[in-house]
Image (cartoon, rainbow, N blue to C red; front, side):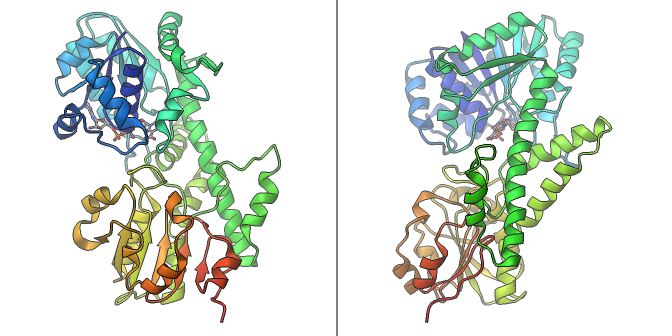
Length: 439
Ligand SMILES: NC(=O)c1ccc[n+]([C@@H]2O[C@H](COP(=O)([O-])OP(=O)(O)OC[C@H]3O[C@@H](n4cnc5c(N)ncnc54)[C@H](O)[C@@H]3O)[C@@H](O)[C@H]2O)c1
């Protein structure tokens, strides 16, 4: 089938590449000429494990190309996916300007009937609004479908190739059947396809992210109580996670959630609730707990070193908001670095994939290092903010030698308390009592 995917970011690029990989003829349209030029050269513009190879092989096979030409792209696809960003406005509501601008482009350039699929995460009612917009403006019939994306950055390829479920929100069963058929190659392992109303699909996406964010804020709050009581939250986590009704996923205490989705979608659902006249106290708390949690490592640092950090140097391991991505949007590490710089400290950073994005944001205010150990030279302390695998078993002797003082603030609870104690580190985790080095 001929498909157009508008927006070649984390979602649009993965979607387009994987639909091309199952034999469709895909055109990716993006408004950013530099991004499109890089994609045309076969450069994968984001770091996502496994994506680059599938991108280049499908481009070479002639099934995938990228353009900034709206008319060409919009006329190409029998089905047009919209995957542009919906970032938060200052009041927490999603900014739908890119989506509306794309809708206007589609209405203007269309030359025959189409199915338009909203993949972007949007508030309840957006699909119905878009349908009304098209009905009023477009010269040919357009059927709007909502098909929320549940991929996780860092495992997006695998998530899209084997989704837990496919959700299709449509007012038209024929259009829903076309979208279900497109997903057929990905659900051969009997994964369900749920066809529902557009509003229910929109709400499903928000509710899924809100549920996961709530679990993270819940365990973070439990961790903070454990911290105050001198209990190790990891023991508690094991105790509750083994309950089959609870489980372990998204129950890791840490420095808070970031990324372009959870913070935005929790606020988006609060906004949807408010507009519907419903107070969403639970999600407001989930959000507030996370705002505080993302500042926790900084507060632990100032409690240890004082409010004025001038003359101090801090190493930061892990900048991306989670492992296996280069995405630093709303990352707890970015919030920490900003606060350290404001307090007068010097920052030496390492991340396996996100240093380019860090440099773009902070310029030379942060010194970036290609290896984790180089970032440690002369550091008064290390803050670990992302649980990249390579941070799990480092050479602690080398670390101690390169740091000015052996102090670790571990925002991801990577190490066992008693071993850090024996290795001679002062170790501050999340929800675990602090350990001092063994004399
Ligand atoms: N990133 C994720 O993990 C994830 C997961 C599920 C859902 N989502 C949702 O998917 C949507 C996209 O997220 P993303 O992370 O891929 O965003 P992104 O910022 O990485 O990509 C958006 C792309 O759209 C392009 N764009 C913006 N306006 C355009 C226009 N008028 N015409 C053409 N292109 C335009 C931008 O240049 C950019 O390349 C958001 O609504 C997000 O909430 C994201």
